[in-house]
Image 1 (tube, helix red, strand yellow):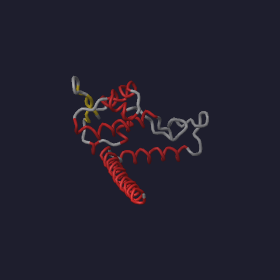
Image 2 (cartoon, one colour):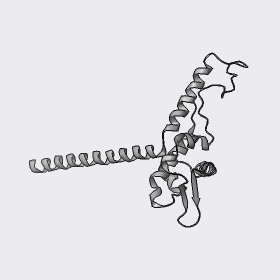
Image 3 (tube, helix red, strand yellow):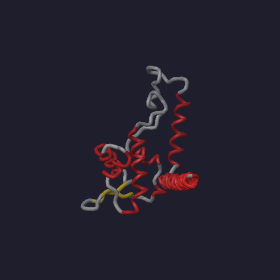
Length: 162
């Protein structure tokens, strides 16, 4: 399967936008810095996302991008399609000329895999990714708190031993 950085970066940028949108429009410069994605590359991606009506741009001071739809109404497949990213496991790009001018014996297998992948990505909403990310961040915070308590107990025990 071929999913290039274009599709991956578009999904990552949309997730970043969705997680921060409550504070108003999100700048591409902010996404670029947080996600280590080139600003010029993000500008290209967001042009396509805007044309696909997944994001809206807000001009002027305090401007940036907002989601054009509810996060539960945007799927990963929508994002990938918007940036013209093919999800294709065939070697022929679906043209059925895998072996020169003929189909390969496994063409249907890879075509069915494409359908399955696209179906899966259509069922994964931006809302579910936001929810997963928030849960991971919460778990990381709780892990840090536990670690801090252990460190302070160790220091206290060491201090009383002196």
